[in-house]
Every structure is written in C-alpha cells, then in structure tokens.
Length: 299
Ligand SMILES: O=C(O)CCC(=O)C(=O)O
Image (tube, rainbow, N blue to C red; front, side, top):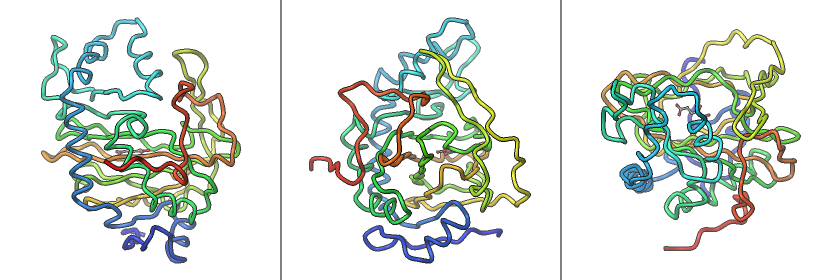
C-alpha cells in the first residue's frame, strides 16, 4: 500500500462496510471533509486566543531551564483536567526567553479543553463522531483527552513511532484516536504515518503512573514491528483520521515554512474499566463524558 484508501465522510457518521473493512484491515481510516473549513477556522481562532492569553506563557520559563525541581513535571502531570501549554524544544533562546510568538513555538495545548472551553466542547462532542465510534464497535465512547497540536514551521518536532493505548489504559484496552487536520497536512509539514495492519500485533509498552509526578514505561512485548512499509497520510483541512489504540504511528518534523495544526481526541469505552495506572487524573467535579449522551449547550 503506498496510498491509503480515503473515503468521503459517511452521511450521519455511520461507517459503511468498506470503511469497516479498511479500519479492521489497516487499523486506521481516513474520512475526508468530516468537518467544514469554517469549523476548522473557528477552532484555530479559539486556539489562537488561548495561546495569546497570559496563561500560555506564564509557565514558559519552567521549560527553558534544566533545573531539577519538579515544576515542569507537575505542570504536565496535572494537565489531565486543565488547559495547559507545552513548548517545542527549539522554542527558547539561550537567555530562556521565547524566540517567537507562542503560536510559532508551542508544541501543543492539552489535555482537557474539550471539557473546559465552549468552542472546543462543541467541536468535540459531535454526534457524527459518536455514530462513527459506535459503528466501529465502541459501545459507550467517552472523551478522555484532547490535544491541539501545532507542529510549527521549522521547529515542529518529530513524534516517534508509538501506540496510543500505551498512554490510555482500560481493561480490556479500548483506546480510539481521532485526529482532525485543521490545515492541510503533507509530508513536508509533518503529516501522520502508519504501519498498515500492525494494530493486529500486541501492545509493546505501557506508560504507568507510579507517583504524584512520575510515570514509568513498562515493556509488555518485545515483538518487533512487522516488516511493512509505512504509509504517509497526507490530509486536506477538514479530514478526520480515526485510528485503533494499537495502531503504530508517527509524524515527521516540520521542515517547511507552513504550520500543521491538528486537533486530536482520544476516547475509551465506558463499558470497559478505566485503570488507576493512567497518568490522566480528573478532579471529581470534571468526570469524563460520553460522546453518546453529552450535548453542549447551543451558543
Ligand atoms: O499530530 C501528530 O503529529 C501526532 C499525533 C499523535 O501521535 C497522536 O495523536 O497520537
């Protein structure tokens, strides 16, 4: 496979038999025009407003130092029920100041804007997404994490080959990823790459919370990755790539002068058990919400 199959978005979200075949065979499914260009622009504008708020940069200094205090760890480990801002490695000048505007050097915003921000909430709790997840076999998908990924021009870093179920655990495993191209994603600006069919192999690693500020990466299987050619998934603005939690994927660095904004959501099935080994923690007044039943208020 050199070019993965792509499909027009199914009316109402329910996947067709051909889409189900592709998802089951490859571990991922590419649906074009799942969201409108206007919806992409609205999310980008909201993200820009958040990035220009004082909250976006007030913690920047903790990432520009290599001191051994745990403020950076805490900022990350407590972000499961917050909206927080994470910078690219190349974001800082030698004196610790930001080299560029936040939108040109942020790596991502995470991890709960889908439950804390009205614009993100209405984009995320999309009834068509619920129908898609149910059509793919999830009984009661709940959104557990969101990431606004910027992959900024020139300094947007590579994301190494991984399986998302490494980071989001249920018993049994039910992690499902949704990746929305908010701008055209190409090989030049760092689109996603998959190993088709490799989701049928085992989960290789589990990232386990071991303390208030710590996680460990546990090896679960030393099985090598299958010998399949990685395929790039270039995606036009508005495309949704949905993928199985065991599907190995990565994205290249952005060496171009164009950004590659994307928005990802991860769901798990509430029919399975959410495990305490997850790094993500939620305060009691912000429980996970079901894609099936949560409907954001209009306006
Ligand atoms: O957007 C990217 O570059 C990587 C996203 C990813 O790996 C994920 O959502 O699991």
